[in-house]
Picture (tube, rainbow, N blue to C red):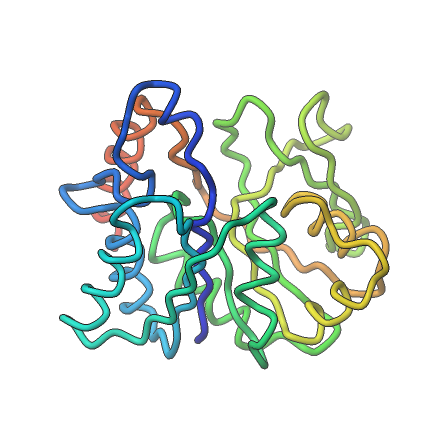
Length: 240
């Protein structure tokens, strides 16, 4: 499987809390979070891992290149300056063919469930994508999903009140095909964010947005989240 890691953000919430370490290098379980994620993806049969990295973060590119060379990993490191989360995805996926899974650098999820998500992505048809969703809500402004009668996501909304009925939100994991990406890239106006990217796929194209539900998933946005994430990781590892 091909993977994309989006690590070109500013890590603004960590900066506001006085953390000078670039967010992807903030430790989880004693290892930089991006290194931990890379090693997890290698356990999931990674053929290629494209990483868009913030070129303004000191030491990040050097860490990734050293890790790649030292462990002979299939990393394609692309230092960029990004103006949006969708632009980061665009820069990573523009030349990928076939199926791939994209995620932000700080996404925490159970590897046992993720391996099933990989299988689901591998079986996608050209007119399908599969989005990770979860009923565990830890974000102040989550991306709510609306599931239609046929079981596909038909809309998303960011923050505010959820859609009526069961509350389910984006888990930050995206199983995508190059055909779906080319469809989005061909539009006159590009999405403004990953949230907008998902909404357009679900509500404004003929792409079928399949659902894969994770029991728990979270992002590490603040220093407080580190301890929560590590408890989750310990919980997940007991089940693997």
